[in-house]
Image 1 (cartoon, rainbow, N blue to C red):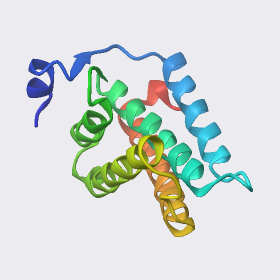
Image 2 (image 1 turned 60 degrees about the vertical axis):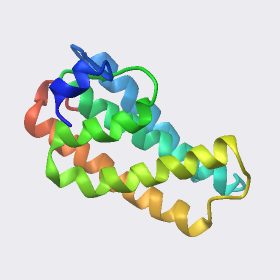
Image 3 (image 1 turned 180 degrees about the horizontal axis):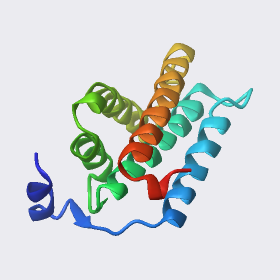
Length: 147
């Protein structure tokens, strides 16, 4: 999939990001990464909250690339678009997060007690790695939006 194909399918639209917008997304990601480690929270909630942090981080990269994801299936599109924005180095993480998206849908809409402690720990580790990767990428390619 290319940016042109996503634009033609009305899955993304062109977007001019601002520092304020990026800082807001950073704040949401930081909050959610912290909240996902709150003792006593169910593993399902921890997983869903960590997943949301990842979604915000991906939105940051997509915004820097000049796009915003829109329409139905925006979570799926987000993980496709972040690969376009950041390139091949992010593909393994984006594919992993797509798998997490499916699990998050199940635990949010269909079932309880879906996520295990091991899955939560793994998602949190990958989310932190993704956070560092996104911030490094922004610093390198879009220093005006650096934290």
